Amino acid sequence: MNFTILDHYQSFVENNFIKKDLDQIEALKIINNTWMNNNKNSLFSYKKNKFGIYIYGSVGTGKTFLLNLFYQYSKVGKKIHFNKLMNKIHESINYNNQNNKIENFLKEFTKNIKILFIDELHIFNIADALIVKKIFDFFGKNKIFLLVSSNFQPNELYNQGLQREDFLPFINFINKNFKLIKLNNSVDYRRFNLNQTKTYFTPINDETKYEFKKLFNRFVDNSLLSSKTIKVKSRTITIENCIANVALCSFNSLCGKNLAHEDYKEIASNFTLFFIEDVPQFNKELSDKCRRFISLIDMLYEQNCSTVILAEAPINAMCQINQLSKEFERTASRLYEMTIIKQIK
Image (tube, rainbow, N blue to C red; front, side, top):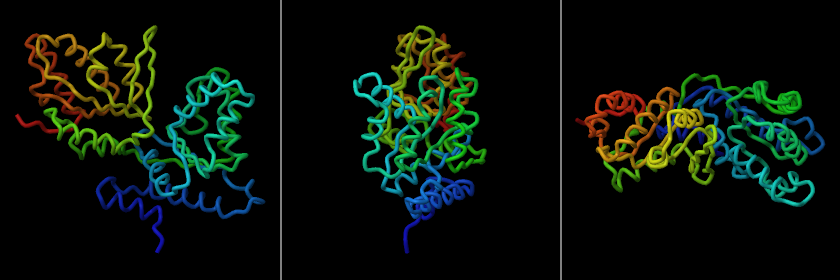
């Protein structure tokens, strides 16, 4: 008997990696049937086929998980985050002297693949808005099936963006040529998984480092990690290791620099899950860094972010600075809530 995509999904359920979800199962059936019909139909009837599948829903409902699952199952495609794809295309435009720069890049990028998985499609700037339809037209003409995820329903893409009227043909293209799947479940499975898992690791040693990275690898594909630059007024802040809504940061990269409340607010608005490693036990010499950490946690908490932390000391022993002890009580309370972990006193 053939091993189906639903068998693959069930194996994750049986190993307690995910909670069984009927919306996800129905979405997988639609994805699989659409993909199989696309392969079965002849070249003559290809124009009647869907160019791909556009799966959308709120953060944490399992869109990226379903993409990863089908990517592993299909074995005939390539997966990329939308931001990374657009960065590569803009680099090709800026540094390539050839004509038809976009088309030449895409020909090389999609060589020998039948299906392309594009995670977290979103349009926030006019540079992407003006070329994205040309990119998707290329995929359609070259019979490359697309499986796309997004937090946005197609009609909500690039809402109130500059020259949006020039972007509307892309929305029409998606609505006409893609099978649309909405994940309706209101459960944030990233939070569900975190709530069932140890997410505050202390002290810092080989064992806790291993467990910290092991949990990180459950949420991301390391081969797809990239950096992201965040602009706050005239300043730029670089998050070195991130993908979609997940960021891996060292304590010093966040609190060792002279960052302020508004910086942390902007950082928090870009991600929903933060892995923060090498958090020290705060003494008087680290007062400035401790104040920044307090500000960071305030902003992550207010933005409803989840955190996984690798630290030298338990939460209730993290701050050894008398002048900040009262202020840190709020931070400690928020850390307990954000990491969902009982500390041993």
